[in-house]
Figure 1 (spheres, helix red, strand yellow):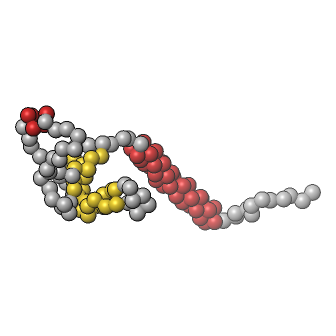
Figure 2 (cartoon, rainbow, N blue to C red):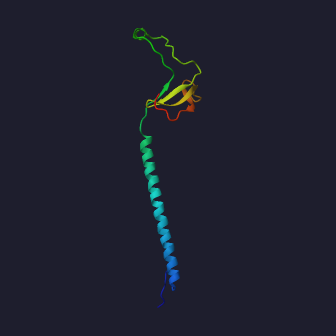
Figure 3 (tube, helix red, strand yellow):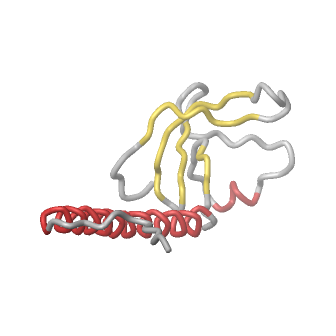
Length: 128
C-alpha cells in the first residue's frame, strides 16, 4: 500500500529550522496585528459613545445691559439694541466655551431659515 504524505518530509535540520522560523514569524505577525485591531475596535466603540453625548450649542448674536425697570417695560414689538453691528461675526459657544466665530447666512435649501457659516475656529480658549 502506498503512503500519501500531505507535506514532504524535511530530511535536513536546516530545512526544519527554516520552516520553524517562518512559522514563528507568521505567529508573531498575527500577534502584532491583534492589539492594533483591538485598539481600533475599542477606539471605534469609544468614539460611538462620545458621538452620542448631547452638547449645548449657542449662537451668540450679541448682548446688552439694561436696568430691571427697562427689562420689565419690554413688551411685544419692543426692540433691544445689542452690542454688535450687522455684519460682525457671531460667537459659537459649546457647553459654555467659545469655539468659533461665524457669519449669519440664509440656508439655500430653505430660505425661511438661517444658519451660521463658520469663518474662524478658536483653539485653546477657556470660556466664552
